Image 1 (cartoon, rainbow, N blue to C red):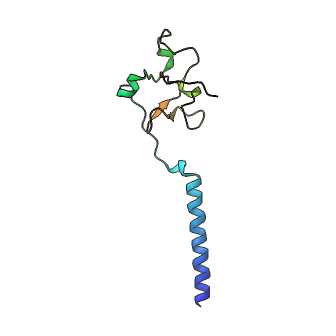
Image 2 (image 1 turned 180 degrees about the horizontal axis):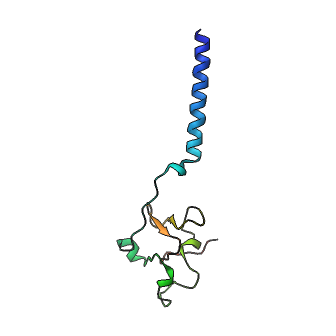
Image 3 (image 1 turned 180 degrees about the vertical axis):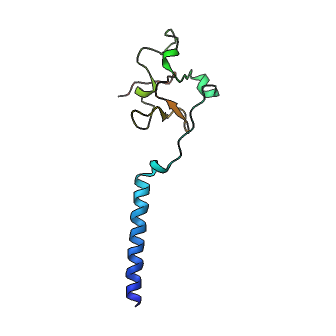
Length: 107
């Protein structure tokens, strides 16, 4: 009888481990979305962050046509997402259509 109980415990543990592995592998699906970066945040202001690059003065140093957060090497997350995590602003999500002075071309 103890043999069948240990087999049952083994199968139960195996099922729990498989479930945990699935959650960890796809943990992003369960993660809360990051708060959007507030353009009035001190660091955002210091780096000239805007949520819409089309509103940046073209004379702004470092800015140019086509330079948006979506094609910056600092951005993470999945392509096509409106707001994505950024290495420059940890714990915050930036607008894919945005821009800041830390913009660097993806390579």
